[in-house]
Length: 428
View 1 (tube, rainbow, N blue to C red):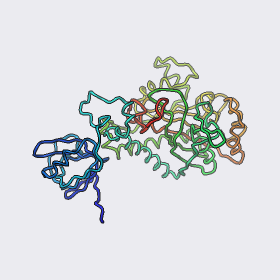
View 2: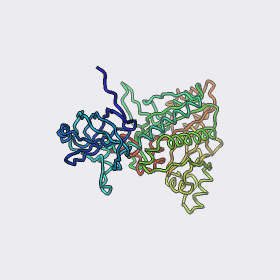
View 3: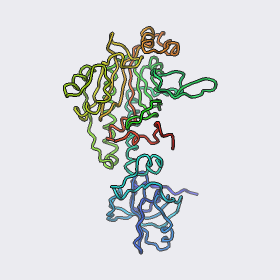
View 4: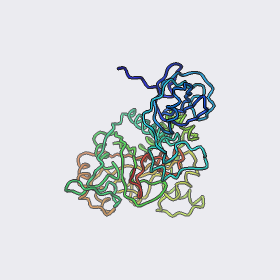
């Protein structure tokens, strides 16, 4: 038996249609009934005039999933919710797929002054994702990842997959989630850092998208304990080489969003422009902050002043390089006795990326591990890999949720994560 071919709402043309989706709104005008039907592509008005269908209409509830067979026709639809105001569907048949019970949160919030608390929304995230503003965020996030992959594929990078269960800390410190790995103790990966280096010293240009975990006991609007990263690593490249890759990549991603996500940007009322770029050394950054009467001492982290710094240079990718060695991880190349080849990138009020040139000389790597109070024996496989002809190499990581937050001006990073994992939330 031939299966009816479903049509998405944004692809409706004049003639017979078969639609499937969710009941977004119901209006009963006695002699005629209206259904606003929603799918992932939009909302269409459907009119029910056949009295034989009135009983089926009366059984419908908001968010019930249905199929509709009907006829597309020209009309003047006044509802601001619909995707195309010049068409409506005259319903010939309604089939109920799954009737929705009373909703724990509203998908359509008519009263804009009443908003569901974020925590409750996250408790019912599968419903929350049906809101047009929320799914717009994640359609844009999908475009971020797609464009990232496209950019580096065109640059002849190789996409890689790194392990998420590791034997020791990737970046030092104690912010690790332990797991029992058969008879051994292991950890969830803080970063793909060490592994992407081991691959780059053979395959030269690599990229990946991976989840990472950090057991930091914070409760802020810009931190998660599980997040996703977009990473690259490049052999025969220094810190400034890969900063240029990052600048070009972000420009490419944003240009694609402007081109391909017009509807979603309009829903979110976000007006994107391609950002400018500025490069400052850490020393220069401290001087700029002090000049603007911000109290900060040399050697202090810039985290508390990221928003202020970005306000001085709006719509700008701010590259801050040449940090002191003691402010960067053990694997960052020391340019001299005090300055490292590490950098951070600020955009939209927060740090979206960090990176740098890596250490490729075993003796220097062992020295830096000891300086960071780490045991070189725990990094033996990593160190030994550089004993057999390893080129100098550099790379960076962009936090996907952080970048989404900065790009769309979200108030809380959890808005840019489908199912956030933080100190208090492990479900759903």
